[in-house]
Image (cartoon, rainbow, N blue to C red):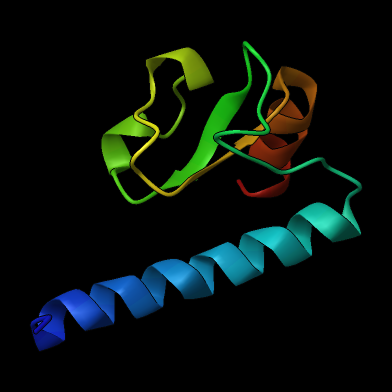
Length: 81
């Protein structure tokens, strides 16, 4: 059984995923999963905070993470300042 704290963290993460997908769609950014991301794509959201800002090559496939191209990531950073 999952502890209530872990359930809360998981729910918050999935809320962040929904918000990121909405923002990506509004700005025509291509958001990719680990298996879809190309070399050099940048992690914008992950279950493991230390992966955010890393390239797909240095992230762990077992974590739920989302990636953007470098140009989309640069726009994302400006939009979310």
